[in-house]
Amino acid sequence: MTVLIVDDHAQVRRIIRSVIADLAMEIRETGTAEEALTLCADSPPDWVLMDIQLPGLDGLAAARVIIASWPAVRVCIVTNYDDLALRATASDAGAAAYVVKENLLVLREILAGPIARGAGDHQRRVH
Image (cartoon, rainbow, N blue to C red):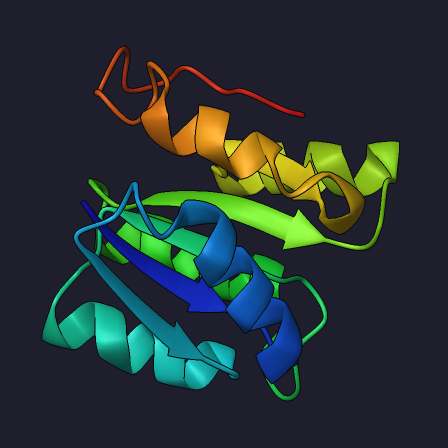
């Protein structure tokens, strides 16, 4: 499995990488949504772990573009905001999951779970 981590804080990207390192064959990273779109165009990953608040294009807008352009790519929103309205917006955008950064270990379950194995194209899992 290939994972793209999108977060503007290098330390957060390192922490996420350490949490999922044994689950992914390849992990790529970027600090901007624009670069994430370029990386997806070059070689779409299986998963994009996307922060919401990014410089330039925000993570939710980027998620919409990724999901529309590369339907096989699953997007998990990874954010500091535990907000019901944002969860609903992420789900409406097509995100497969929503994880609050204080609970990053949930990423392991998501990446190894039924969504990762392709169980149902429209299944949505919100944590």
